[in-house]
Image (cartoon, rainbow, N blue to C red; front, side, top):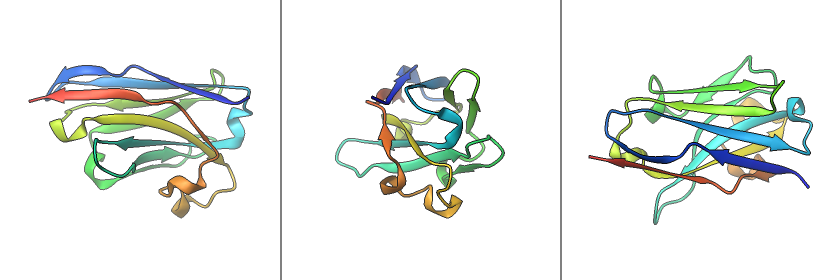
Length: 127
């Protein structure tokens, strides 16, 4: 079965950086757009960003623009989320997810468009 495995989470101080990775297996990785979502305690899962199947188009939610960078390596079946200038409000469980390459870019913000999800990795930012 398809597996998405996130790694790289942890505890860092505000202003610090982390890089999350999401490794996919049993998936034709280049046929999927990849998204990153996060969920803080007591809150709904929210869109962080997404990258198209070929990496040509990348989208971010406003709160992370200029601080987070998404990249993918289709030769390694891996998508990355580089996070910088981290803030306490970035604390959450971060999930990667895969959506068909046919998904319209405007729909990539919607978690219901994603077919596969990872188990999540905790990111905690201390003030």
